[in-house]
Image 1: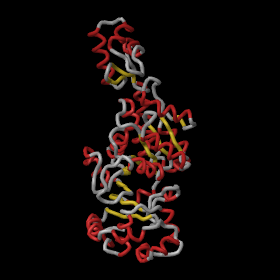
Image 2 (image 1 turned 180 degrees about the vertical axis):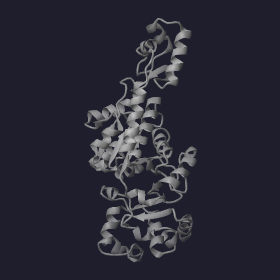
Image 3 (image 1 turned 90 degrees about the vertical axis):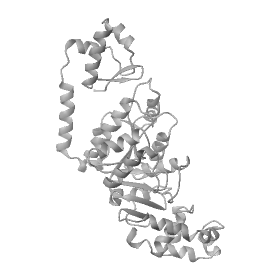
Image 4 (image 1 turned 45 degrees about the vertical axis):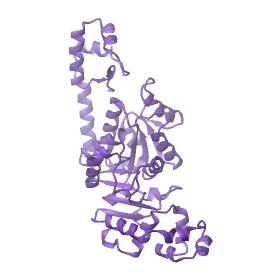
Length: 375
C-alpha cells in the first residue's frame, strides 16, 4: 500500500490498527474467518471476544480519532512510502516465521529489498578502533557479495556498518525504534536519507511514535527476524546486541561473533556467545561459507579483488627495524612508555617509527597508546 491507495478503506483500517496493541496471531485468527481488515471495525464486542480478542477492543477501535488517521495518510506523500501488513505479498517471509511477527511494517525506500537475503550486523554504540574497522570491513565484503546488510541505525557499530555499504553505493536496511516520521539518533538524519535513497528504513511503530527504551528490544527482533544470520561485532555482556543475538537463536537463525582481546570489555559479550556455541568468525568469507544460501550471491571478481588487496597489504615489506618494533606493540592497548622500554630506543625515534607504522595501517593510535591491527 502506498500513496496510490492511501484513501482506501483498507489502508485507513490498517493505519488505525497501528495505534493499537493487537498481536499478529490474533489477527491471523480473524483472517481465518474474514477477508478484509476493515470488517474488524464492524464487529460487535461479543463477536470480537468470540474470535479471542480481549474485552474492550470494540471501544478502543471506536475511539481512534479520524484526524489522527488523516495525519497518517498525509505522510504517504510519495511512491517510496509503503504500509505492508503481514498478509501482504511484500511482507518478508522470514519475518513472518517468528512467533512475535509484527502485524504491519512502515517502509520508506525500496520495499523489494525486504524480500532479499539479509545479514544483520549489530554491536556496541562505542566500539574500539578495531571494532569500527571490523564492522566496516565485514559489512563491505558481505554487501559486495550480494547480501543486504540490516542494522538498527544506532550510533557505533550499526552506523559504521550502514555507512560502509552506502559508500559502496549498495543498499542497506535500517530498522527504526520510532515512527518513520522521526529519525533517531538525530545525528544520523543525513545517513537515514541516504539509506532511503539506496535501501530502506523499516518500523512497526505508528507514525508519531517517539523514543522509548522498551521499543528497541522490539526493534531488535525485526532485525534478526528478517535476516538469515546475525553478526555481533563488539558487545558488552549486558547489551542490546546480545538481546538481538539471543532473539536470533530463538528464531533458529545463525549467529556469528568476532572474538577480541580478553582485556577488552566489549569483547566479553562476543566471548560469552562463543561459549554458548555461536560460531567464531575472523573473516566475512566464513559467514558466506556457513550460510549455503549465500553461495549463489558471490561475485567472484569482487572477492578476488578483495583477496588481492588483502594479500598486497600482507606483502608490504617492512624494514627489519620496523618489524622488530612491531613486535613490541600488542593487539591490546600498549603505552608509549611500554614500547620505549621494550625496544630500548629513544623516544623521538620510536615516535617517528610509530607514525610511519600508523600511516601504513599496521598500528592504530588509541587512548592510552597504540594497538596492533589484525592482519
